Amino acid sequence: MKYAQATNYALHTMVYLASISPDSLVGVRLLAELQSVSTTYLSKILTKLAKEDLVSSSPGVNGGYRLARSADSITFLDIIEAVEGRQAILTCQLAGVEKEEACVIQQKMEVGEQQLKSYLAGITILEIVEELDESVKSFLLKHQR
Amino acid sequence: MKYAQATNYALHTMVYLASISPDSLVGVRLLAELQSVSTTYLSKILTKLAKEDLVSSSPGVNGGYRLARSADSITFLDIIEAVEGRQAILTCQLAGVEKEEACVIQQKMEVGEQQLKSYLAGITILEIVEELDESVKSFLLKHQR
DNA sequence: CTAATTATAGACATTAAGACTCTTTAATTA
DNA sequence: TAATTAAAGAGTCTTAATGTCTATAATTAG
Ligand code: SF4
Ligand code: SF4
Image (cartoon, rainbow over all chains, first blue to last red; front, top):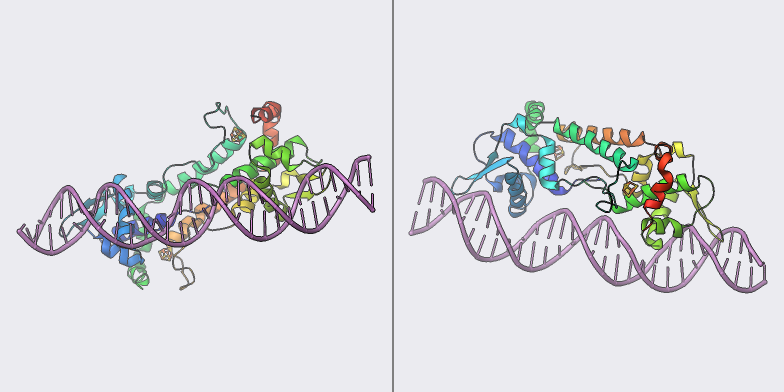
């Protein structure tokens, strides 16, 4: 079980946005350079984040992206679901064929999935940035190749 | 985040093996028919399970598969890892480039992953079969198309 | 011993998804 | 008006998942 690379980019981008400049706009070019990924590809990921109201965008000169909400209201789960979509961890093969009453297999997996979601929903970007704060400069520099 | 279809087959197959006949051998043909999957494909999955010592196999007439260990010693995690492999949920892009000290992003994700693993390691096949026991017959019939 | 049965293995084909590029369009501002 | 930047779409490339086919090896029934 592995998240997509795009999710990785998204998480890092959000942390960058929150730590570099919580308010002012940051262009996709800088964000892409920091992660050694192409601007066009990262752009698509950011568009997904924008549609879920996690970032807001402005075109034009000096345009770019910034967090759409306060950093303490954006969680890992928000970001992951925005990129990965909201598919169940295990899809019952009988879905739709007949109501699955209370199949134990499904039940158990759903509980596990829900636990993970709850955990991820408890991690805010603010929390990440704060714990990162002392070494945020070296952190950012570290990723410049 | 979604497990492979093969994982789904594997979980169901193990439940079948444990509920139909804990001891006697069951051929792959029956197991495949129950799940409407080809015998050759399910065979590959079963080979993976065999390599992780979750099932034992016997060729020849009246051969087939059975659980390699007692049902209470086989967990969902065992089965899932046997099929999916053991890859981290999120791979740091700097892996190997330099030691990542204690990056918060990675830390948090690892904790979540570990929680899920612990949960899955707590679910035994025996537990599933027992909770399924009352309606095991209708359960099995339900999946015959 | 022989033949039927069954798992194992490998090569192969097909499909789906992920990762990424290129180009055009639209919006904004200097 | 021109430069800048995001948004959108089409298209490419790669990889992984899914599945098939065929041959081989092991086992047992007869
Ligand atoms: S056993 Fe449960 S999860 Fe599996 S096909 Fe039946 S209802 Fe669905
Ligand atoms: S921020 Fe953490 S997870 Fe991301 S690349 Fe750096 S060390 Fe790895």
